[in-house]
Image (cartoon, rainbow, N blue to C red; front, side, top):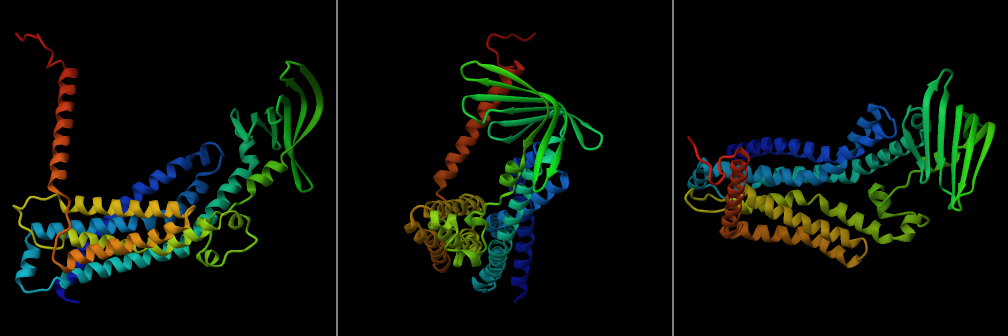
Length: 400
């Protein structure tokens, strides 16, 4: 590899890593925040939350990597063009391949990385994540020992514990059960405990009452010395792990179990997931080609055009949206599988045509003018509001 090629690769790789880290942090944060209820509602430890948050990363990486490649290539080449480095390279008689080769090599490494994550690591991480979530839901001890808070055990079934007592006993137990249509049951006990009976766990309540109210308004009150409330059914249901097609390994998707109920109900979802995994890794190469077609040539600073980074990201977003659209439709319409493969192939072919013919892929200048006008209007609107709030633009106001 030539010195110039190593220079381009080194600069592009540095920008790629920076873009990957920041984009990954933003995407990871948006995915982690909805799962904060694992700690707040289910009473799990921070360590369990960190495990779940870490296992989310493999599902985000294949989506983020292609955009990091597009940002790195477009920004690096745009900066080199601004510093007249591309013009110097062209004036020295170097072929365009001198710029294309290190970019494609980096994109190929990123694509292979995405392929390994998507087909090797992500399925196992998703399975482990579902197991952790199921275990947290089934851990009823962590649910009921949270003092003074209502916990939803099942649809129509809520439980509250007033306080924890010595020897793992519970005080002030309140249970509201409205699962049976037309009947509302309310249990209250002064004390109780979770007791293991064989393979079952029951909530043993002592010294309490049961209020039973029907839709007709009939109310009955039953006092009890001890009452056993079975929790095993809810624990077993909560601990069940249901694996979706995206949770399965690639080997399983290639040869699914014919007795798999989910596969029997909708085999198209399994084929669509397999098609998506076989194409998702290619977007790193596609976006690199798009960025090369946008910013890979030397341009005059006086030539008006939309910034290459904006153009590359805009086109990449549109292409990726088409890919997501086709993958979503392929679950129900198998014919969209052709589009799943066609989107990256056609996009790459168009970008290669621009590169080979020494043309520049760019957005129309009218778009840039519209964005500039819109930004100006927003700025004017904001200034008008600021002046009105500060009282500087009120009509009829005199100074002095």
